[in-house]
Amino acid sequence: MKKSWVFGLVGVLVLIAIGVTVRTKRQSAQIKLIEVVEGPVVEAIYGIGKVEALRRFQVKSGVPSGIMRLPIREGDTVKAGDVLVAFTEGSSIRAPFAGMITRVNYKLGESVFAGNIIAELIDPTNFELRVVLDQRAAMRVKTDQVAMLSFDGLRSEEFFATVRAVYSSESQFTILLSPKSLPTNVLEGMTADVSIEISKKEKGILVPVSSIHEKRVTRVREGQKAQIEIQTGLVNNDLVEVVSGDLRGGDKVEVKVQ
Image 1 (cartoon, rainbow, N blue to C red):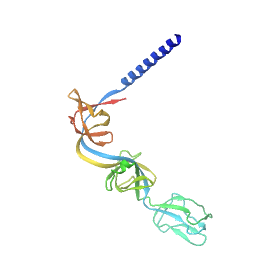
Image 2: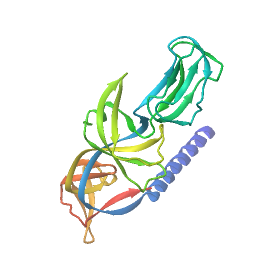
Image 3: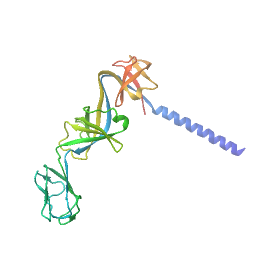
Image 4: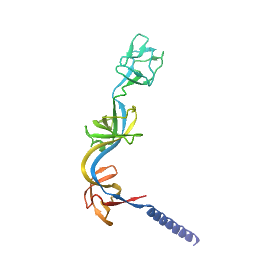
């Protein structure tokens, strides 16, 4: 009897605790009124773009040799025709274009095998961006679509690019972007938030995605609250287009916030 009484008491306490938790969660969820937006609707695909140099030259020896002269260091800028490395057998390799040395793998006096990369040169004035997407997103991207770029530390500035290529390599679905402009101090390897414009309407009704529950929103118009059934269209980040339903600019919808 004593054990049964103890177990019963524990059960009651657990139920009380659950009730308190549920009530606390309900109390913490607040209702916020968000105004319905009327304006252009843009649907976009989002990803991370990595800056890569379009022109790259790897310094390699065609035969085993020793390094007799190595007048470059990482970070150096060189002109077209500058000597990058000279070998003990008398041959040398010159820069095919003006650029920056981004890698030096050997030191003066060391020996190299044929095909080994001694150094690397890039053109720091000509970049593209590489974006890897999942299959569903990649299928909606086409060449010549417009993309907006946003760099960390420069969120107030907008940069634009166009889709140059869409292809698959080793099961990765890759988008290459040709930038129309980039920050003046951008470096290879930096990343940008990318939004690729898929479709656009000049005018539409937009509500927060979080305001929709089972294809309905709670509309507040002139102080009167009503449940409105809607159908949605394009998605614009955290907003969604309403294509049918009694909503108009100036209305407000309820959104639950924690």
